[in-house]
Image (cartoon, rainbow, N blue to C red; front, top):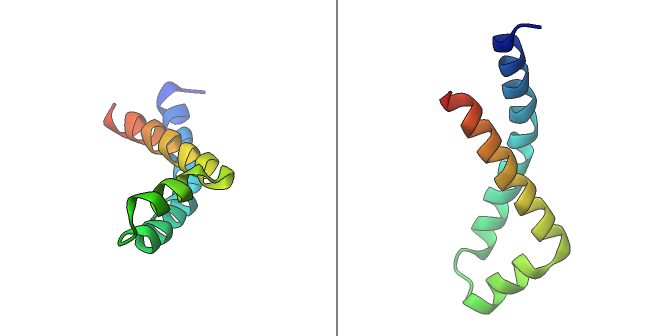
Length: 69
């Protein structure tokens, strides 16, 4: 497989995972936007939130790195 074909395929696969994780992040960001510091820390201390936010950041960085090159 050609290098540009692999890159295109990785961009499409990462965008498929990025869309739901970005939707999750935007919905939760709107919920915690006006909260105090402690409730935001509590939100990011929950296990599902830690994992989902970490996955979102990794996928976003991977997608960004692929699209910049």
